[in-house]
Amino acid sequence: MSGSTPATRQHWWAWAVLGVAVVVLLVLGARTTPTTGYSEDRLVSVAGQMKCLACSGESVANSQAPLAIEMRRVIGTQMRQGKTDDEILSYFAARYGAKVLLTPSASGLVSLVWVIPVVVAAAALAGLMLAFGHWRRMATDGPVATPADRDLVDRVRRGPR
Image (cartoon, rainbow, N blue to C red; front, side, top):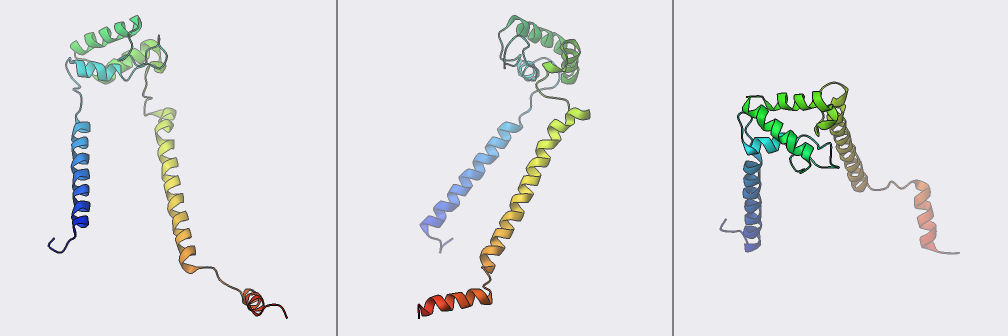
């Protein structure tokens, strides 16, 4: 980099810092909560997947309603019994109905909730790519003048007679 300018080197450092930040965020985001045994992290994770039926817009993990406190106690008891997260969620769905789950299941007709947004986003992206390609071709090709257009321009240039 002996021939690089200070602005180029500064630009390189900005990308390096951005890269490091992305890696750090990915590592922090990749941490998973335990899926066996009892821990507060796991309890909060499972309770965060259910909505409090006594509150408006709160998860069981965040609510302080008596029902949510009781649900967290039951979650803890089931964890100590060795139940998996799916078994715990299934227990509550069987007891209170599927409406207790904040995340819909990915099977049957409900799977459309997961598939449709992806299909719409892909179609929108494909449409944008086609439109940008068309606009770019139009900009580089330029408008095509017909002989009538050229005659009109020549008459306007010559002026009134």
